[in-house]
Length: 85
Length: 408
Image (cartoon, rainbow over all chains, first blue to last red):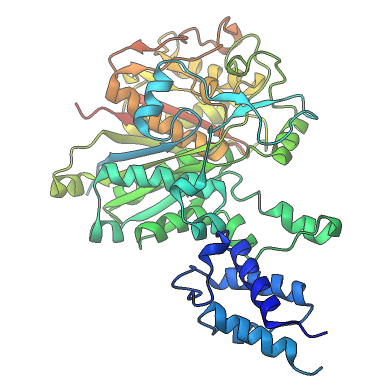
């Protein structure tokens, strides 16, 4: 079953907010992960592990660490989850 | 060339009796207690249900979400005490960048273990191993985070000698200044051991008080009725500075640190030793180049356990004979904050000099004749104080004594 972009976006925003202990409304699609959300490499690890559990799919940590915005993370997950298995 | 003189130019505290120096001193000298019923977890399986607790601690008041995620409580307390100490010292910019940091903790990061272990061994708890587990639990997070927050690029050391950690940190910092290695050192100790797991493990050793008295009456150092210590939490940091640095900055010091001794009983991991304890006291007095008669106040280790108090009292009797100066047992009001306790008591020693007051010792009456310490008062006493001896003795037989002198 393929997940919709809307569902991926929703899970992504909620996961980032939970792992960074931020109110959900502070996490926006155009938020810069480091400059706006203060995400460190260890936070990224926590977010990645949570998303992997959520979607049951292994992510490429190196690639994710290079992403700048929440939207880019959503796009990455979308490409990962919607590619044919 | 003789060693450089070392002065205290800033102090900070975060503990059950106050979250800044003024509040702390008011509460301490007034005889208030920071020992309270434990409410942050259910202590009921334990016979001990009280601890020294910082009330209404709200990390988000002091720290960003990122800092909260990456620091355990013992580091947070240490950072808060360091902020106050550095602010009081007035050290900024390039001077702060050259500064060294020595911090003491006996237990360090303990809280982060549990969710990680639960994730490994109790899958039903649905825990994950947090990526911050290691950086949060490592003991040197304390000294490192102080350096990171203030940009201190000098030596950076975390000392662990259990309950004398803070005093050893201060003493080591003083030695670096005496040797001319640095102009300023931030030093002290921090601990956050009030957890269910630590309550039960300390209880298993039989060293915690099981008293059913009201919380403020539980810890009874040197009393005939004492039956153990009370766990506590907090931090204290001081800024030490050389005389040259004080002069260059035109900074009036608060007190001088004139003596330090650190030694090991080399006999038992857990039982104090009269020879070792008295040796440490005598060595500190020798280092300060003063005789026992010149000590105007003793800040006691005084945990409230049978053996510790009796040994400390006997050591003091051995050195001071019948001329024991007024003493104070701060753990009667604060409980025992392990690696932070001796740093807190060092701050109390300096405050005693500043205010010319010997703080109270609660619950000590009737005193135990075997401890030889009759000179304890439940209320503050005005007293001429030039020199204060601060004692700390720890598991591992690690003893550390400091001597502070008035600048007046």
